[in-house]
Length: 129
Image (cartoon, rainbow, N blue to C red; front, side):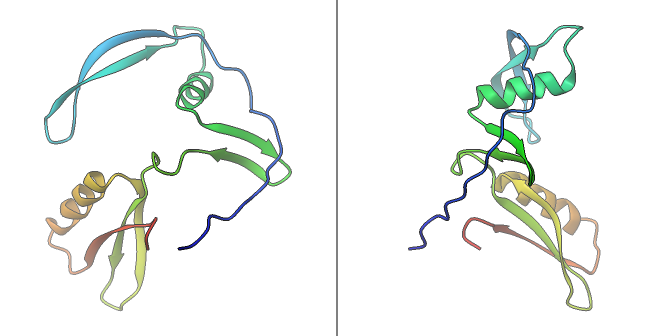
C-alpha cells in the first residue's frame, strides 16, 4: 500500500475570523431531501473572507501563506474527491469538475449525458485513480 507523502509548509493563517450567530434551519438537497443544517450569520459588518475563514477553522482546516503561495490542510477522508471527465470525438480527455461527492459527480455527469452530446462523460474517485 502506498504511504502518504510528507510535506512541510510554513506560514500563518491569512487573517482574522469573525463571530457568528448560529441558527438551526432545514435545507433541501438537489434531489429534494430535507435535512437539518445550521445557518452561520456573521452580521452586516463581517466580510465574506472573514466568514469563510471562520467556517474553515471550525471545520478543522489549517491554512496559511508562505513563499510558495496559499495552502490548506484538510482531513483527507472528509474532503470530496470525485471528478467528472469528458472525452470528445477525437479521444481527448478533459476534466469537467472536481472535488465533488460521488452523488454530486453522478448528477453532473447525468445532466451532461441528458443533453445528448456525442461526448462521453464518466466519474472517477481521484483518491483511487
